[in-house]
Amino acid sequence: MLDIGPVPVRVVRVTYMGELGYELYIPTEYSHAAHDALIAGIRAAGVEPVHCGLLALDSLRLEKGYRDFAVDIDNTDTPLQAGLGFAVDFTKPDFIGRDALLRQKASGPLTRRIVQFLLQDPGQRLHGNEPILCDGRDVGYIRAAAFGPTLGASVGLGVVDHPDGITPDLLRRHRWEVEVCDARIPATPSLAPLYDPRGDRVRQ
Image (cartoon, rainbow, N blue to C red; front, side, top):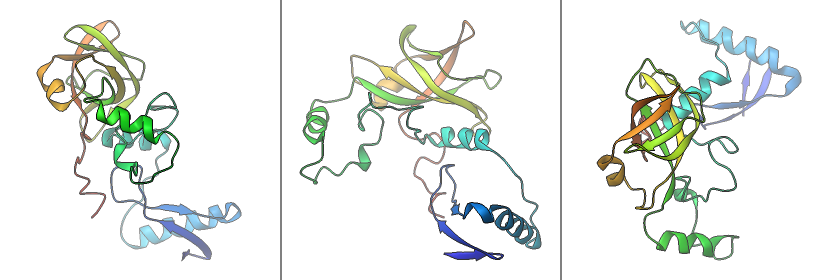
């Protein structure tokens, strides 16, 4: 807890934008007072604050590959398919779905995965629901997308089905495109975040 001006605020070091960040939990009735005090403090430090909204945050989290439940992933995706296996504690003996996940993990490369895509043409725009093609064959679709200002082109998260199993090697060996307004745009796929894949900036 800390005070921002006259307002007690709970500060949590957590980010949804791929950079070192904080969430501020402020009593609703004091939100204006906390905002004004925060802006005044930033300006006193010699920095001009920039206000931005959820669309900007959505763009940044897509660059980082952060998932959004009910947008990029839903209850039809397992944590392994969503790329969130690192968050599953398989040493816990009794959680619902543990046995199914262990079977899926032991079965080899997954044939269905959430994959990040970056268009190779910065002039094209992704909005979501565009078909994904592997060697000219439809293998999935983009679930959510935005222009990624740091990456310099449109970026999105899509679901891909491939019978050979989706691995970094498979992604490298094949030709990937996303269909945008009847044009097939070359795209770079990745299972790791395209922006700051090791998470160095979050830990600064």
